[in-house]
Amino acid sequence: MSSAISFDHLFRLTDGIGLFEHALGSVPRREHGYCVDDVARGLVVLTREPSPGVDLVRLLERYLAFVLAAQAVDGAVHNRRDSDGRWRDDPGLGDCWGRALWGLGTAAASAPTRRLRASARAGFLASAGRRSPWPRAMTFAALGAGEVLLAHPDDEPARALLTAAVEVIGPVGANPSWPWPEPTLRYANGAVPEALILAGMCLPDKVVLANGLRLLAWLLQVETRDGNLSPTPVGGRRQGGDPGPGFDQQPIEAAAIADACACARAHAATGRKRWLTGLGRAHGWFLGHNDSSMALLNPDTGGCYDGLEPGGRNLNQGAESTLALLSTAQHARRLLASTP
Image (cartoon, rainbow, N blue to C red):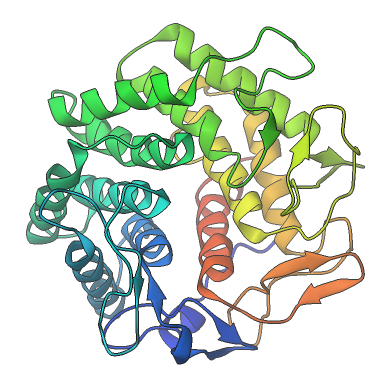
């Protein structure tokens, strides 16, 4: 499977302010503006890129400036901004707060220059003292806190945030048919075991690590059909529900599986190649190894179609889907191409 990466569509979706959320086909829909959810994901992807060129560093700087501008004095975070640069919502502690911390923590640990790392770290500290009541927001925040701790093991704000996130995510269930800490598989599901694996590595806590690996193994079993990844659809999946396939399937689900299987998580925590099978399925999902046998990658634009439907694809190529493709391709390039 090819793991070639093109940032062409990401540049196409970006202007002097930030990354447009939606596209009509491959054309940015400027009237819908930008959101921190996507720009923070873009910050993670660009920070992971090895030896980025000048153009990618400038893009990273723009995304970092956007996320920092979204922060309120009390550490809460705006999400929606219009194309004139005005924020259209009140700052809060929802998913955008968690994703902002994910992006800032990743950049604080691994951005390509000392100046960018220092700026991201200051932003991370400005919001890391807050706590969200929503498990998914705390899950995303945990990913940023873990990145900080991998680079700086003595960082106490990051440690406290990661510890709190484990508590909010909740205990792993004893029922082997449904160990998931929620009654429903919802969205970005792979982020939950990834956060637990990362917490187990960084705190360190062997029980939390084992729980994260157990959840990931179960999720891969549930989301595999005929040897291919069959992600939880937009409507979610409940215990005892239809085994699938379910539609619409979103690229973010495949990317979350790839993140959990790779990116210094399950594979790095255990050294076991079994996790690369999950990464291969996630990467293959974008290339047509899925329930509709249709590729989500558009090779002409470098973008990714927004969803997999029963008989086709959503032909729009927005920011979330394209970043999901790029993130998964980065993992595949790093781990699959070099593994016998």
